[in-house]
Length: 193
Image (cartoon, rainbow, N blue to C red; front, top):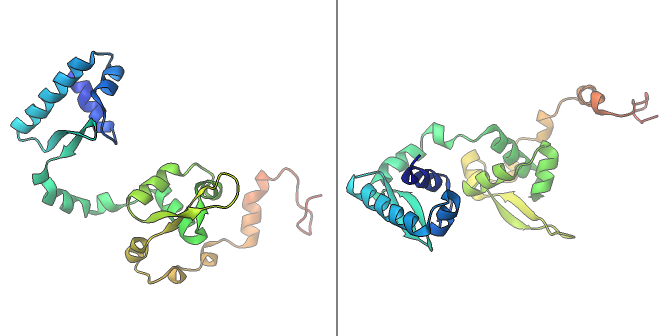
């Protein structure tokens, strides 16, 4: 792949502006060559009527959508395909909604997997936000839901969320599901022997 193709791929994957020197380090090319290619790519995109524009911002380079594409992007953003959350994000949102304020570690404990990416997605979409810090060592960030979350769900307050008990299986089903994970069997009164 030529230098331009590699630069395009890097810019496509980047979330923040990249300095030419960063791209040069990754591509193992002189910074001057990367600077020349970035300027040429910017000019070519502009000359060819591309839907992508390349800008030098905040000390680095970043790809943006062309401003003229805005009405189409707004319509696209409203489609069901774009607005649907992943299963991980929905699970994470449920944990935050019912246990807030909750830390990232607490969410991971409930879900059994790291939930950092899902939390970032939900925060970026405005469904959750940082609401404080936990007391004690480390002072973990605490998350809670936003007004947008309630608006999207069509509820006036968190009290309008359906009771969690309606979605928890009966105790005997939970016991059966948890049995393979216990190191010691339960006695008839529910305690370990």
